[in-house]
Structures are given as structure tokens and as C-alpha cells.
Length: 303
Image (tube, rainbow, N blue to C red):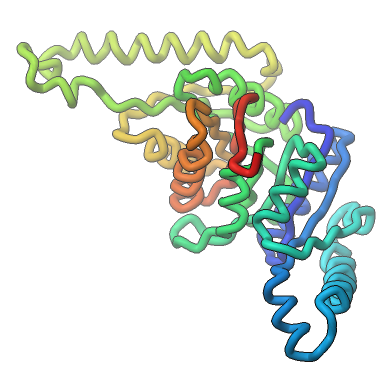
């Protein structure tokens, strides 16, 4: 997570959101970065409430904002350095408000909590949609008792984003003295070319040569990443799966990973949809947090 100058933490007062804020506080401190904490309230709901009790919308917004800040002060009291941050309250469409805030403040990293335990489909929908659309890196945090990351899985697909994923993994490893597993998942061509004669399945030397080529590419990519400290423990993994997310999830589960780092290829303006799909699968099928890394030319739908 290099070159972090501004961190935006989106909070909703849930337990996972508190874990996310703890991580954001720690990352901001270690990077000497500015931390902005923001909470969004739905202006339509505020308007309905104001109408019901016969006060202006602005009066109701001010009242709720005061309540949010009072609650926030008590909520962060037990977090290290929690009393050092202030809460910004936004009234509007929550997703649009958070996205605009992050972009206006040129966030290098957005941190948000997600719900669910890796076995149920109860993800924080706003956090996930924010991850899809904001141009910066996004850290979606599963509940952590302490802001520690000990095991990292970096998912590599040999696209242009792979080098950046490795750089982020190296940075996290340095910050937290974490172990890193670099995984590449591939859909075996010999399972698809069965109509050719002789069949690839009958040639184990073909399979061995194919896997060796991938292993060599993976080793070369990691070797070329000079951000890894000499003492960082890095292991490589090749997984045969029909989809990249399946291999990534299985590796994360086997390694009991705290964090999975995913890159987006960024080859179309629909890339945020693909990001959401991969991220959602990992969050649904593992207990890990996810760091989503964007390409430099990422275009948010809000732009």
C-alpha cells in the first residue's frame, strides 16, 4: 500500500466498520497519511422524518449530525488514537455521497467494513458498490480484533496489474511482517482440447511442461519485484481451477489468510463490474479481508 497520502474510512457504526476504522487508523499512522472518517445518511429518510415532526430538512440534518458525532466519540473511545479523528457526516444518496467525497479528497485508499462470515451472502452492499466504482485502492475489512495482517494471498493473472498487486503485497508484508503467498489460478487447456488427437490428457509431459512454464513466469514476476524485503517469506502456488476466484478462495482458505490482494485488468469501462464480481466471491467464500487494486487509467462511472 505504497504512496498513501490520504485515507478515507467509511463507517456505519457496525462492528466490522469499527474493525475497518481500526485498520485505517493504523495504516494512516504508519504511512504518515491524512485520515478522513465519513458517515453517510440517506437524505430521503431524513426528509420524511422532518416532514413527520414538522421541522425543516436542514434542521433535521443538523440534529442527526450532532447525534452521529456524539455517538462516534463514544464508539471510538477504545480504539488506539481513536480520539484524534473527527467524523464528517454527509446527507444525500449514501453511495453517491461517499464516492464523491473520496474523489474530491483524492483518496489513495478507501477503507470500509463488510458484514458476513465467509459462508453467508450478507455483504455490505454499499461498501461493495463503493469498491467497484471508486478509482482508488479499496480495503474491505472483515472483522479483526486487532489491526494485524499476518498472512497475505496475492492473486496473479499475468495481466498488467500483476506487478502492482505484488508491490502492494510487499508493502503490506513490510508493514506487518506478514507472510505472502503468490497464487496463479489457471483453467487447464488440456481439459478443453479433448477433441484434438492425440488427446493432451494422454501426454503427461505436456502437462508438466505447461505447469513449468507457468511456474517460471510466476518466479520471474516475483523476482522482478524488488520491493520485497529479503526477510519476507514468499511462497508460490499454482492452482488448476475453471475460474480465478475459485483458486484464490481455496488458497486463502488453506493459508487461513487475513488479506487477499486482487488487481483489476481495466480493459473496459465495465471493469468495476468485474472487480465487484471477483471481490464478492472472495468475500463470500473466505473469511479474509480484500484489498482491491485499480489500474492508473481506471474510470469511475461517476466521472
